Image (cartoon, rainbow, N blue to C red; front, side):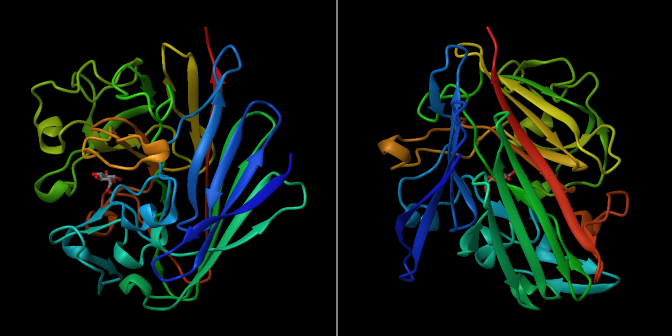
Length: 351
Ligand code: BGC
């Protein structure tokens, strides 16, 4: 183990971004940058020990600044879509930026995917922490929010993401990582042959503007059901309204067995290489996004042009737009309370 630090170019504002490279001697390497606390690459071995980069991304920090896909980034304070870009806390309305029609998506231009974080590396050489103190009023939200995101690459081939924060006023905290995975390699094309299992009996359907209607619908008998593992492509083009609205899977799944502790929530296997990714999280929800809006992204890593469904996201999170739905678990962080959540992506190979 050991962490290498290198420069990752200059942002348009003239700030130098850095890359932190973690290597575990077990065939895995993880690169993260202080720009957006973003995961830039994950090298993961197949059954024969051949490692490939399984994460979509860019080669230069300015491409991350200009990109609209949030490749690998940390999202916060308030992930996913929020109706009218307004959050409500105890009856008070706070206006966020309308950066997607009338909605707020992933917290807007002041969101955590767009800032340079303060980095520190741990003595063991297997973790990098990113720290940020968000001012009261940042993104339109109340409270000074002190947040640390720590990435750890373990000897067991896990990428662990730990979030820990506090605020001095009641605020919203609903963060995630927006990694796009292709277990055949980031340049391999579509993810539709990946086999997915999701431990969710229900999902939250969306209506206009991809905002949740507030319903919690059972997946039973619908193409949304991944409780028995199936390929992502098996039903993605089914004649089902929710898939039509979103152009494929792009929905929050209501995870089973939510009691605030880590449990396995998802498993993805790529049949050719045998690479497998298991996801463990304490979150109540996961946005399964099949990369439907990734359209001809030029200048991906190594010059690769990413196309629709070149990568899949499993964004562990609170439910989207929870502020407007009393039946959804609250994403309010009370003053002085601790925001803490963990997600682990565990890589292995079968065959
Ligand atoms: C959303 C997608 C969106 C993507 C990039 C995902 O979290 O679910 O609808 O296109 O982020 O903005």
